[in-house]
Amino acid sequence: MQKTTENLKSAFAGESQANRRYLAFAKKAQSEGKIGIAKLFRAAAEGETVHALRHLQTLGEVKDTVENLKAAVSGETYEIDTMYPGFISEAQEEKESGAEISFKNALSVEMIHQELFREALEKMEKGDDLEDFDYYICPVCGYPAISEIPDSCPICHTPKDKFEKI
Ligand SMILES: [Fe+2]
Ligand SMILES: [Fe+2]
Image 1 (tube, rainbow, N blue to C red):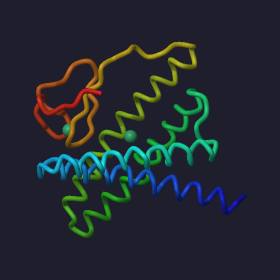
Image 2: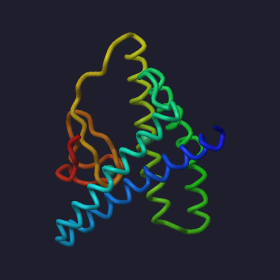
Image 3: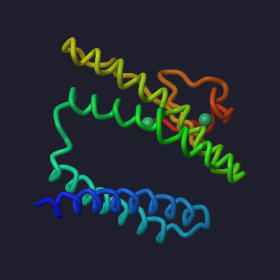
Image 4: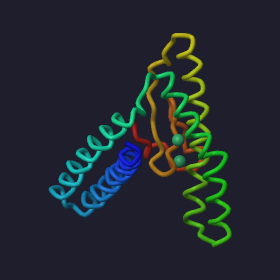
């Protein structure tokens, strides 16, 4: 079972990545006017999501919402305290400015995610749900605007009209 647990984790990681890769490829195909190819990539991406979710379920990593929020806070905390600071300083050492910006944008948004998940966890622990807010996501950095979109993204200055509603 030990091998199988490791294999499930690795299959979850691989399928998750394939999902995002195919969605990126679909957007590219769409921008080239290749509608049929774009749709094939989206269909395959959806299949990879089915696989990834099943592997994660089988690992027993989808629990009740209180436990899931705790897991989310701890994942965000690891990214904020350990992963991105290390990646940012290595990108600076290697003068990889594109990667540095990508990591910094992500780090800024992970801090917001961490806070939102903490607030959600507090609500859950009191037996409440969050309000049913509308969320709008910056397509450049991932910043989540809640209920209202600012004139431009506070992290990367992308204008309001580019935000995508969830
Ligand atoms: Fe996050
Ligand atoms: Fe942004």
